[in-house]
Image 1 (spheres, rainbow, N blue to C red):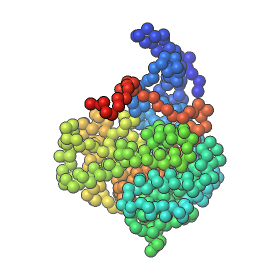
Image 2 (cartoon, rainbow, N blue to C red):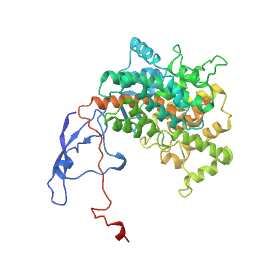
Image 3 (spheres, rainbow, N blue to C red):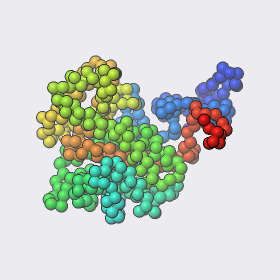
Image 4 (cartoon, helix red, strand yellow):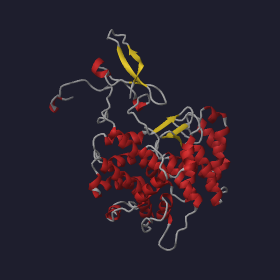
Length: 437
């Protein structure tokens, strides 16, 4: 990074001397004021809850322009990647910085395919969970447990270990998610098959049984692959920042990714598509399409406590580019399965139409987001709602790994140590218990 010729001047009204702060320019996006020496020179910190105005790192992986509704992976628009590439190509891009050629894609896919099985002991680990455990509770445990099985790839500072653990995590996540699902349904686990694509293999492990051959539906496989691509990375979000912060301590890659899984579980983050489907089911119980006007009235009433889930986004102030792509996929899947007359999907499409036309939603830019459509697609495919976030974690694993590796390779990286504005009691003396009032 090279500082700009322009500097920011920080002045204080209490008579403290002014301070010159360097300004860095990214290849695109806002300029960044470097405050690293602020405390040393002034004895003051900045205060930024939620880090809404703070760049925690320098990154060359993913860029978002929320005002334009733009999402780039390594410079490539998400629309082009989703339409022209598969998930394996996207993984290669995020990890290596460039799209693979034919030979590189084949070699990378073969490497991932060879690592899809998990240690048999994982089945015994699963048995410790209740059958009705939430899949994300299971996934948090299983991913963290990988470090107990693969001691040859737990040194985060060893490039070879990082490469091996990256392939293992990308390869084994679909197997673990499918195992978590099969466990909760009481069905037998299915081993991966090396002749299938990444998405086909996942869907077979999810939905096949030993009773009959599984025939993948190309429309559904492509829909799943697109879900993986659209969720592969999203800049410095909560779970990615968690992975970076966890990894900054030097912990092993499996533990760092498990921390990301745990963060993703939150309903404000990865659980948003689950929350959107739950909302639709609640409206369906109210009376479905016939009651949607009443529901919208409650959403507009600030005192009702009713929230519209799956609409709007913290970063995108325009239409979420991922939502446009997922909307196309959503309608392709519903057409393929003949589900447009399903009551829940009719309700979802009615709600979508209102949100895109009603001035209340349009003026507030409460457009349907990727979670709204991906939830509908997954339910149509047959994935149970509690498993949605686990599939999000599966897709996001490659982004977490790419971000973690980038951080470790950054000569300026240090263990994360946020500061605070302390508002508690000042120093005081302990009174013996007999004398306390």
